[in-house]
Amino acid sequence: MLAIAAVAILVGTILQRVSGAGVGLVVAPTLTLLMGPANGVLLTNGVTIMSGLLIMLAIRRDVDWRKAALIIPAAAVGVIPGALLVRELPPGWLQITIGLVVLLALATTFGLPRLPHVRSQGGAVVAGAVGGLFNATAGISAPVMVIHAKLSRWEQKPFQATLQPIFMAMGILSVIAKTAFGSFHLATLPPWWMLPVVVGVVLAGIGIGTVLTRWVPPARARVLAITLAGVGGVLTLVRGVLALQG
Image (tube, rainbow, N blue to C red; front, top):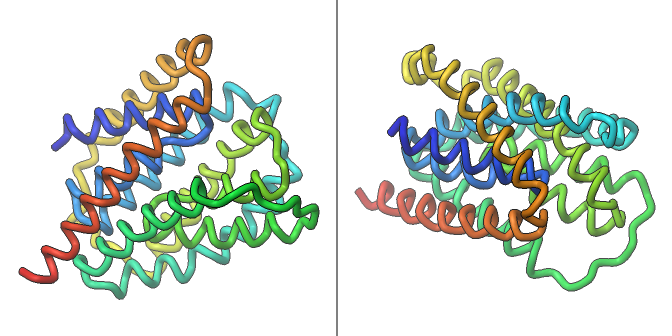
């Protein structure tokens, strides 16, 4: 289980370094299958905190801090109902919810035609709130951010950089909210020694991803992340349905 989790975190971090997103898309469905929905998403939140912080330090000059300042406070509102859903839903239903969120988000993001140009800053606020909800519930907020980027005509370079502090902040807010509402049990969390292992894997992924940025286009890395997320979403949904039947 640790080896599979490490591979998922490594691949997700590499894709996030190259394209701006990938940790949540790849890691959340994988860890949900391995550890259960509550703990899997919680660990995903932890990984996004570390990956977002470390990648942000590498590309901090391109971060649009004004945009981040609009999105992050709104995310603080969205994580609250997300944490309550994680606490109240049975594991089977929570897995179904996570699977549906992943698949619906991906289908919406990449199935929509060219979207109109929305200049209002309210779009960033809405994206932050919905992204916070999705992040706390399913560990995934990238598709919401991609939709907002399409609507606001957000250029790739600042978008990719600004996602990192947003992902980091959403991860912190999700962990705080779920701790406050008792959305997980401490006794069921992975052992403490997994933390340095995860940090090491994230650092390795950032290093590999930094090298790959010279040859791999962000669009290609994003397609791979979407494919892996879709497979994981389907498996998570099926497992949730089987859990209910069992």
